[in-house]
Image (cartoon, rainbow, N blue to C red; front, side, top):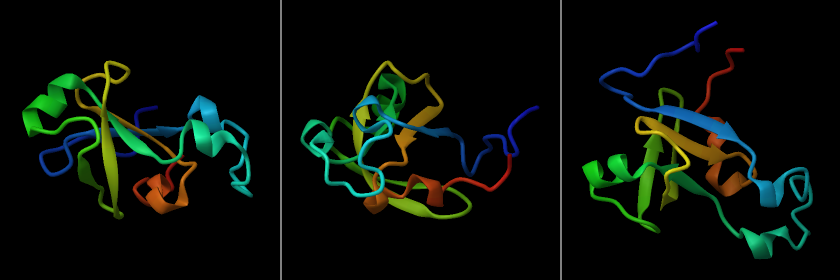
Length: 105
């Protein structure tokens, strides 16, 4: 089935949320693990094409907004995502990626 929402003129990107290897099943409840040394904060993965289009680079802070909310997060420019897609993990409550997602399944 297609996603519950498609990109449009107002919200042109697809946000994919998931886990990052360094925090996969570790520290999501207590956050008292050494994993925070490996990855101390969250970032949004942005393709090089999209980063160039918006004039942002690694470490720049951006606001990611959806119909449900917004978060402030640092950018990581990477080829790991395709143009038009963004990726954020949901491990960090201070960058609550799930505030941006719908409850559709």
